[in-house]
Length: 184
Image (cartoon, rainbow, N blue to C red; front, side, top):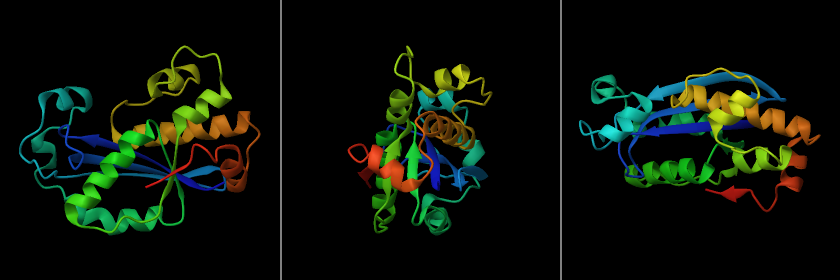
């Protein structure tokens, strides 16, 4: 089983305002690497105070960071050919599309799946399917609302969900979740 889990943090409500990106790479059902990039958003130096309160990233943290345009080719190489997982995937896919549009990049054909739906199929009786609640349920400690940590927990939750559902290969993911897999 191979996929990448992805998470964005944003500076504002704008879809192109990524200020941090985290990617967790899963190969053969094992987490191989987790990477993150601080990103200088187009709104720099403006950050919405609500967003700062959520993730703790402020303009000073990204003043010397690359833009999304500067890191995209490295990120694209990591994502190429992989299923993308995200917790609340519609949000993260929207941010990715917004950044690609802003910088004039071609949108690659990336299939993505939301780990919330995967977790709901695996555990039907939980009162919440938020990332923090699922992590607590599985005794996973992490620093919530930092992109690398959120991406890694998303990957762990997905792997636990697939294990519970007896899914061990990408073709089984596609078969079981075919109605839920979206394309960027």
